[in-house]
Image (cartoon, rainbow, N blue to C red; front, side):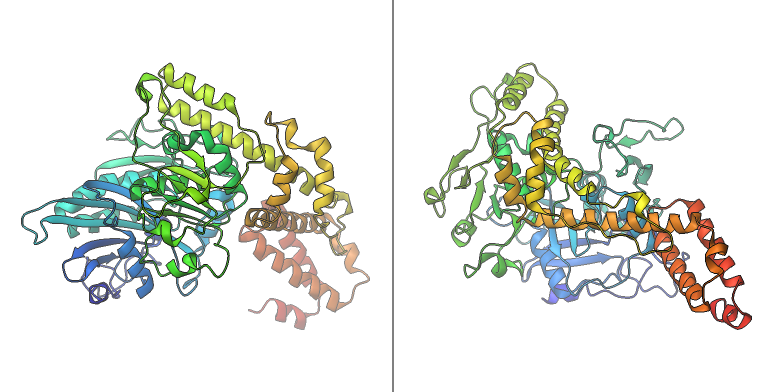
Length: 586
C-alpha cells in the first residue's frame, strides 16, 4: 500500500509532519499523552488505493504495516452499511510483533488499582472511530469520506466517544493545526489514577471524569457534578468513562439476555451480524461488559471485516471456531461463518406495536435453530441449539415493561438491567471466591524464618459439593441447573483467567504476610547463630521483596517497607567490612 507508506513514522515530536531538531522538554516525550492514547490516526479514501492512512500523530509512533492496514479497513464502514453523515464506532486489533517497549511505571500503577475488567490491553489496540461521509461536489467521487481514530489500550469507550464528539467536527473543518493543538492539550492531562476525579481540558471544554478503582462499590461508580465551583467554563461531567447504555444496546434481545449472559460466561464463539458498525460495536462491547466484575478473558472484535488479516483464522472449518465475539455488518459473512455455533442477527432498529415511547418493548429477536439460517436473507434472531441452564427471569422483563409504561428515564432502566446482570454474576462468582479463600493458608502458619506454606489446589468436585451450603441459591432467586453451568464454566477461558488472577493475588498476599512476619521478628536474635552466607541470603531476599513491593506487586504498608530496610541495614552491619563493600558498593 503506497498510501500507507506515506504515514511511515518519522522521528518528529514537533509540528505535524515537520522534523523536530531536539527532544521535548519532558524527560520522556509525550509521557502524559501516552498515559491515555497510543496515537491518533487520520484515514481517508483514496480514489486509486481505497482507504489510506493519511496521518499518524505523534509522528514517530511505530505501527507495523499489518497494523496500519487493519486500522485503515476498520476505520470505514463497509459498503453494506450505507452510513451517511457522522458515525461513531470502535474496533480492536491484535498488536503485531509483541510488546515493543517496556510499560511505564504509571501504567503498572494504573493496572494495580483498576478493576480487572478495566485494565490496559496487553496485546491489543482499541480503536475509537469518528467517521464522516457527506456529499461534496468538489471531490471526484462526490463524497467527503474521512475518519479520525483514537488508538488506545484503555477500554474507556464513553470518554473517547465524548472526546471525539468534541474534536472530530473541528478537525474536519480546520485539519492538521487543530489536531496538533488537541494532542498538546492531552499531553498536559494528569495520569489516569484509579479512584481519582480528574478535570481534562480540551478545545475550550473541561471533561470531568472519575477513574474507576477496585475499591469502588458497584453502585458508586457513576460521577455526579462536583468540585467545579472555580472552573470556567463549567465542566462537562461524564457519569462514567466506560459504561454503556445497556438497555439501549440490549433492546432487541432483552428476552434472551440471560441466555447471552450464559454464552458469554462460558466463552462460547458468537457472531453478531448488525446493520452498521455502530450497532455491531455497541452490542459486542455490551456483551463483553455484562460479566462485570468478572474479567472478560476471551477475544472480542467490536467491528470486523473480511479484509482483516485474521479472517482466515476465524473462518477455517478444519477446527472449532475460536473463543471470540465477532461483530460484523457484511451479510456475506453468514455464508462463510455459518458453521459457528451461535449467530445473533440484529435488524434495523424498529419498534413494534406502539413503540417504546408509548410503553411497548422493542421487537424481540427470536430463538431459532441454525438449520433455519439462510445465506443472505437472514431474518433477525439468535440462531443456536444452546439450552440455557437457568430459568428466564420473567420478573425482570415485567419490571422493564412497567418502567417503560410509566415513562421512566432510560438511565433508570439501564441501572435496573445492569443491577440484574451484576447480581447474576456475583451470585455465580461468590461461591467460587468463598471456596478459593479457604485454600489460603492461615496467617498464624506463616513463620518468619521458614518457607511460606503452599496454597492448596482447587478441586472441582470438592467445590461442587460445597454448593449445597454456599451455592448461588443463597443470593439469587433464579432456579435452574447451577451445577451444570459450573461444570461447563470450568472448561472455559473465564475460569482459567479468574483462577490464575486469584491465585496470583493470593500468592502475593502470602508473600506479603511472610515479609510482615520477618519484619516483626527479632533479627538480631536470629543472626546470633547464623553463618555469613545465611545473612547475605536474607539481605538479597529482602531486597528482592522490596523491589516487588515498591512496584505495586505486593500489598504491604509503608511501615513494613521501612522495617525491611532497617533489617537490611542491621544485617549488613553485622557482616565483615569486605562483604559490606560488596553488598553496598560506593
